[in-house]
Length: 168
Image 1 (cartoon, rainbow, N blue to C red):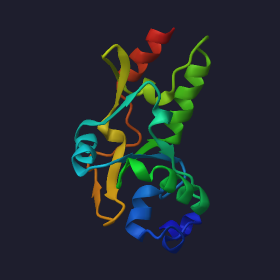
Image 2: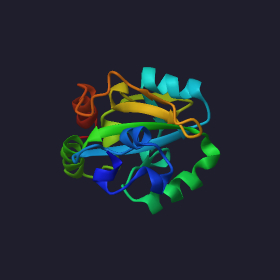
Image 3: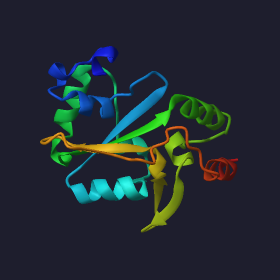
Image 4: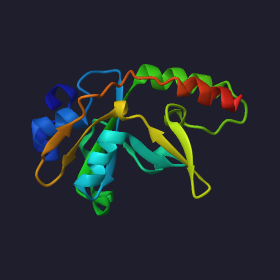
């Protein structure tokens, strides 16, 4: 699987199953990684969706099919824990909503914010990306994987349009 995409398990020291979760298996999808320190947090994300404050890009790393890039980011984020939650969104959805956001004057929102439920906690914007975008997670040490049976990278909630309307 990873071999088809230019990255193999020997280069990253991951088994093919981990690479199959980590890397998109076909073009048209973007994957992100969020590191966490414990299984309970990973399970909560799998069950409830992914909470992030303010900016999605501050708490996730995009997965690029390049062993040097991945080794670098896995090293930089090592202190955040041994559990890697993999999020995946269709490129068509990302492009469509980015184009809609580009048409809104003075907009600073990111597509994942638009796809998420917006809530406030301690007077800070908090977002909940639906669990449909959570592909699964794995433990770096054991390479044990848990997949989300409800993973749907094409999912778009009715909240997305409502969130866009609020920005206009």
